[in-house]
Length: 257
Image 1 (cartoon, rainbow, N blue to C red):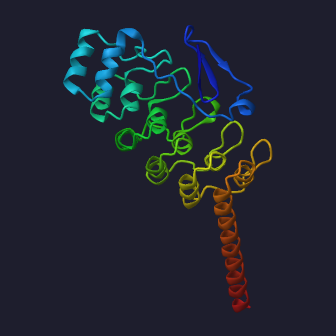
Image 2: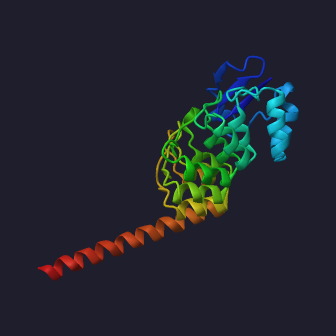
Image 3: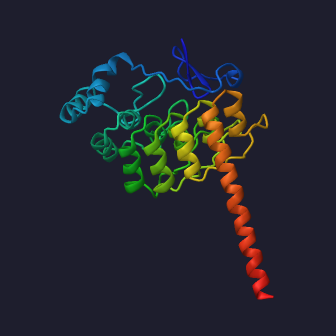
């Protein structure tokens, strides 16, 4: 069975083999699906993590003689990835102190920071920013050039996007391998709230993707009329503000003369 992460297909029988799906842009328009299965021997352990059973998790980790780089999922997720996925900050801290690598990558090249953003686990994001900011790269890239901000925006996590932009100072205009911004995808999938948030955060609205399309173009193309209207109004407001600034600057120059 093959599962897609971003535009990466991972063969579950051969998890080390990654196959780039070159047709995904045309066939599924880059909509991400994730393999959530767990290796059979770790099912109970991961369940305990998901439920936040702190003492039981620590005991089970001893019982199975857990190694910090051990793969708990066929996708290559280790203990730090899994704790980040379920938003278990206390467990995350514990296993990092035990030697877990918060910069490790799975087979889709996701770091735990990506996984937390993908799942909207804002407490994990804040933990990384507060305690590991010197080592964490906020704009770290996985396959297909997705960053944590990109992940959070595409999956609709408004608060996570806000934290990454304002506290993490990430690049809100980051481009994926199709030269699309998060705004392109929010417009493509008619996520009105996310489009509003991204515009408020200053994402550039007129960048063009590899097909020469802006976020406004994608909204119209996919009948996302409310989004198209919102972007259009933003464009008009920006244009008026720009004209006012030019007028003020010209007036100041005349006063100097």
